[in-house]
Image (cartoon, rainbow, N blue to C red; front, side, top):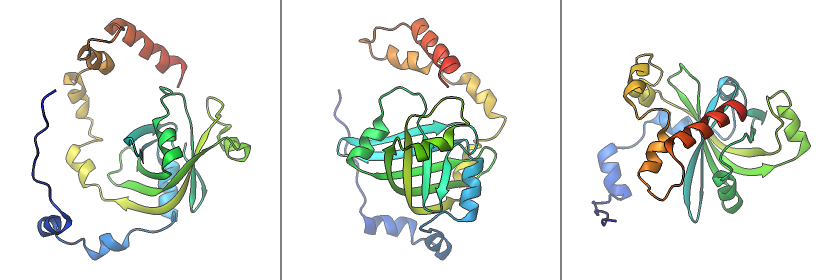
Length: 210
């Protein structure tokens, strides 16, 4: 493996000289709980990115389900159902070591996103799991998030990326394709699965384990 290049690193003073100070509206938009607008946003959100960290590194995991799958237990607490995945449980392992957590909620078609930061832990408490009885499969574990900070993020990034543009369907046609795992494994010759086998495993998982 080639040695990584060492580029110039900026400190806080140098960074401030480039980007300046945040505007008053940006400094005051953060709040320590979930307001009505935030709760409504979460009720319509089918997708959230979940960031955790530990001494071994950081992880960002996508979570998705029907709109409102993340339950607002109170103005300071959320619950996320644990759905079937790859069983690596990176997020849960990280939280066991470091409870700090960051969430980024999306609502399709909206440019603004919602950021929620706080502390999280995993539970199997029936009083929480019963909140997800209407889901397609029984929920055995849930992630509790104790909210410390919540605020909306402006839509500039979503607008620049044209994330919700129907024209992006054309971009998908020239992207690597649905079997990205096979392409990734092709770069690692130690893998024992063929492209066809990976495609079959993915198709079965998407059909049977959602």
